[in-house]
Length: 98
Image 1 (cartoon, rainbow, N blue to C red):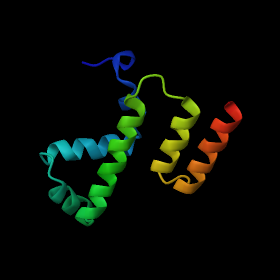
Image 2: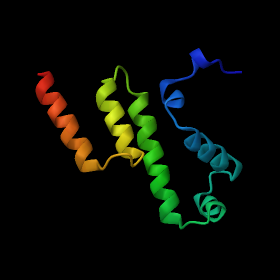
Image 3: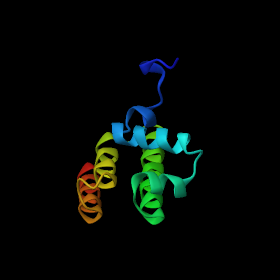
Image 4: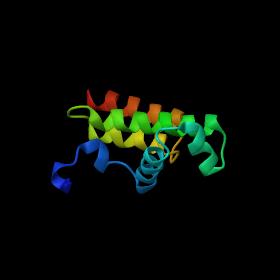
């Protein structure tokens, strides 16, 4: 069994609804079409959710990410802030940091 301290950063960083989504994806043998039926949404909606989840995993799977930038990206991926705002915040942060 995986211990918390052994878990990769990308896994720890996921929200509970992301983990539930992954579980259902596994239970549906990776079929996005069947998963769309389960969630009662269209295939493109599930594909978009999958793409966002992939981006989250990529963000947290990198070595030594900047925590502030990564947090902003995750907020945007979770639709907590819009993409344009995220870009502005990251650009300003990087400009000030230099």
